[in-house]
Image 1: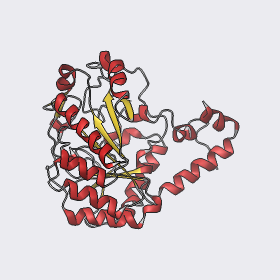
Image 2 (image 1 turned 90 degrees about the vertical axis):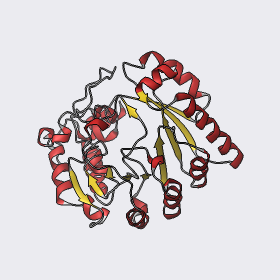
Image 3 (image 1 turned 135 degrees about the horizontal axis):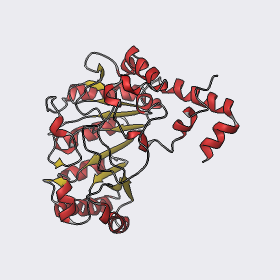
Image 4 (image 1 turned 180 degrees about the vertical axis):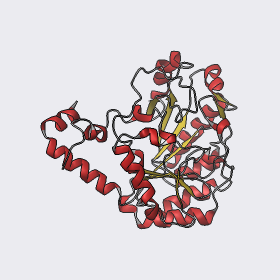
Length: 325
């Protein structure tokens, strides 16, 4: 692995790069995940919604515009804007208006939208294309209706396929640039369909993504078929990269914090930048750098390290650790 070779043979360079990445990351989130709504039209077996105690609602326009205004002002530091978090974004009553507003305020930013596809009707498809969303991700967890609908309950597979077909026809007629990604979460319930799923959608979508199972920091039984170790041996990248903002403005430590158990601020009363540079987030980063995951309740049982295992970020933190500048 080239990253490990870099770290072992050029340790000073690795330290310098790590320190630079850490320093730059404190300027402003590279990724903003903004929850238009936490309501959902599905009941998925891998989702922790049954454990969610916070109120459900929709983000109001004034708050959304406040977020977009600051994101626009700090756009040189913003790599990705995601108008979704925990919920089905297309359920927001003003979805089309909000998605168009995001592009208006962030003309050069990369915008990715994720949906279960059940509500991807003609009007919403047109808004997505008009807003020049860079990538539309549709989550589907089976090739057959029996498998898909047993996992993503209340979502009819044939309806989703019809919606995708219509979206692609519109994209073609409008010469739209939005790329379509179809994703599937690999788990014991659908592992037998993964290969055929990939073959089927590869000829239709721009990208097919196979995602490992996430246990939502211990709230969902791990149905992963992977044997990869899930222990963090490096500081998780999320608090250095992404800020998750809920529909009512509360900001969380992590995009996986579905019930907002670890708040770090509130954008109704604070700027995004002040939250990002806050004492609380610096305290968390310090704990992660020390490997003190046990002191952070939402991090203790998280298995999301598997998604960062091959990243440069991880290898810059591995032993020879702690590296001194």
